[in-house]
Structure formats: C-alpha cells, structure tokens
Image (tube, rainbow, N blue to C red; front, top):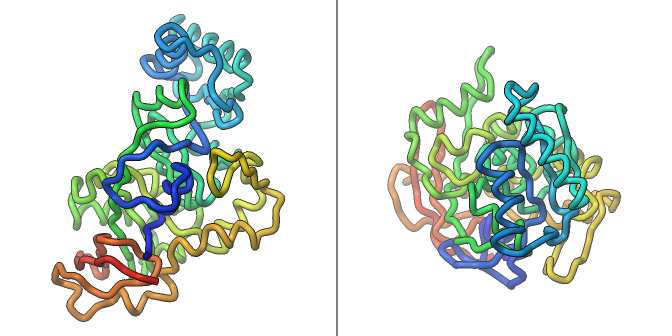
Length: 323
C-alpha cells in the first residue's frame, strides 16, 4: 500500500506500522515549540504542575521556547511573563531563545526543521517548517498534552496535493503565488487537511520562498503544509538538523544525529513521495473531473489532487494505490 507523507510521519511517531486519514492515534512529537504569549505558555507551565502534578516535562530535549512576540516588553505584565518563561526554561533544562527573531522562523535556523519530523506549536504559523518536509502542526491549547505526557491524541488528517506549474513572471514573489492559490481555490478549500505542495514552480523556488508559502497554510483552511524534501532542503537539513530527531519507533529512542551521512537522511525522506518521477502520471487527460484515477506510487489513498496552471484549478481524486 502507498501512504501520504503525513501518514508515514505520523505512523512513525505513533509507533505503529501504518496509519490512514481519520485514524485516532497517540503521537509523540519530535519537537515541541512555543513562544511567550499570555494564555498559552504561562497557562501550560501552571496547569502542568498544579492540575496534572507534573513537575518536569517528559524528554525536555524535545522542547524549545522563544521570547519573540512581546519584545521589548511594553508593560510590566509582559516583562513578568518573560521572567516566568526564563525561569521555567532554566528549571526544566529547556533552551529559551530571546530576541533572535520570530520563533517559527528561527526554529528552522536552529535545526528544528528536520525532514520527516513531527513538530507541534500552539501557533499555526509553525507550518512554515513544512518547507523542509517537517510535519508541523499548530495545536492551540492541545499542546498542553505534550507538557504532561510523552504523547498527544491526534486524528490523522487527510491530504490535498497541489501541483503548481507554469512560469513565474518578473516581480512575482512567493507570497503572490500563495494569494493566487487562495483566490482560485478559496480560503476554506483545504480545511482540516494537510496541503502537499509540488510542481515546477515550487521546485524552482528558494527555501525562503517555500517557507513563506508554507507559513500561510491556515489561510487555505489547512492544518499545515508540506513540501517533499529535495536536494536543496536535504543539504540544509544535514547542516542544521537537531541531534535528537528520531527515526523508527520513537518509543525506542533510536536517535539519528545531524552529522550522519546525507544518504541516510535521504533514505528516510525521499520515499515519502516522488513527484518528479510521476509528474506525467498526475496529468490525467480527464483532470477536470473528480474521479478515481491512477496516481503516483507513494501518493496515498483518497488524496485529493489539484493542478494549478494558468490560474485554473483542475481537480481529480486519487484513489487507493499499491506500490
């Protein structure tokens, strides 16, 4: 059977052989990311200890905090939150990065954007890490689960695969391309789904451009957005990936360090989907109709496929596949 990128990643972190969209799982995030914001981190710190009796977060090496949204502090209550955040990080052994930039950008620079990893944050803009093949989900206050338990409850989301083809005109930026997607598809077209983005336009785009688009996934209604790792992102990951990213059944703690050969990292990530090899197969002559159509090996079961060329969305339904 074939699986989507999301299904492969979530099967690994759930410690099971396979999952499908709609399955209820207990997933162990590789990374838990948060920043200074009242009603979130301060509440997590307090409730974990007072309501759940958890004095130490499980596996603190998975966590990272940022002081980035309320700097400089404009009021005493904001500075108090900063003090609480620093103190909690010191007590827990969790790094706190202050005034280095917005966390969901800086986390990629610090190596939390590992291809094939699963990351959670309360802010949906963490989807930016999907530019590197990281499944990064904004879980809002459900992130509290990760502060009190190794795993969090999750329903495996379905996938919408969008292929963007054509020639980008001079002066057109990545944000313009994203707004084009919203215009032709609609702001709720991908609600509660993972968008898997591919195509010649995406292939040619810089890493920064891919981050720009992925960070806006919520404005299509999507849970997050993913781009399959290519040579560009794999090379970046080799240089920056965190040492405690895990592969296989994460419960067994089989750590794979960023210094390992690029071939090993490539071996885990590229089988997720190979849209280059199967580009012709995706361009079905009846792509204007919803239907069960032969799809690429590595494309999962009941994945919606959308091809955007010349401003016209063309839809088809990719059914259950075998490799």
